[in-house]
Image 1 (cartoon, helix red, strand yellow):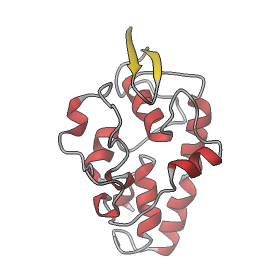
Image 2 (tube, one colour):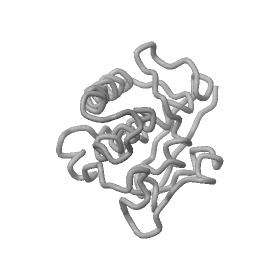
Image 3 (tube, helix red, strand yellow):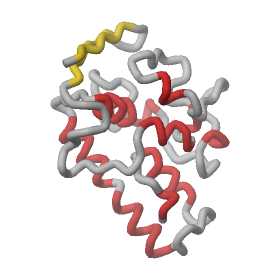
Image 4 (cartoon, one colour):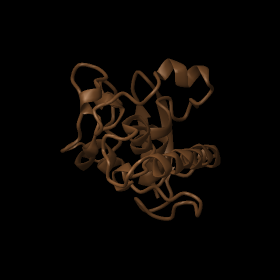
Length: 166
């Protein structure tokens, strides 16, 4: 078991990696994209990790990542459209927990690395709720039509669903 210690201006936190990276996920949790794939495709306007210490994650995740040096910019997203709410909105909605102060994607990165926590059930439930967008896209769009419902497709990428296949 490996222990990860985080100490930066955003968080002092320690966790254990109890599972192998990318394996032994909950049976209800079947993400289609790894964090590395998401970052390479373009998510969160390229701003998810900007200015934050992300040294806990493998450097390989960031070699081809689309990261903005100038704040959130939809041009860094795969579908070139803004499809996420602000961190302040996430906090207002109660979606932010102390262990993962930057939300779902931070939780997913740590889960992918092998951390398991008391917040897993809640986050997996939130992930599953995004499936409703897949049904809406399938009903309203021709398969492979990149121009149809790009905001929903980008939002799905933010939740590790590979909307390019829809």
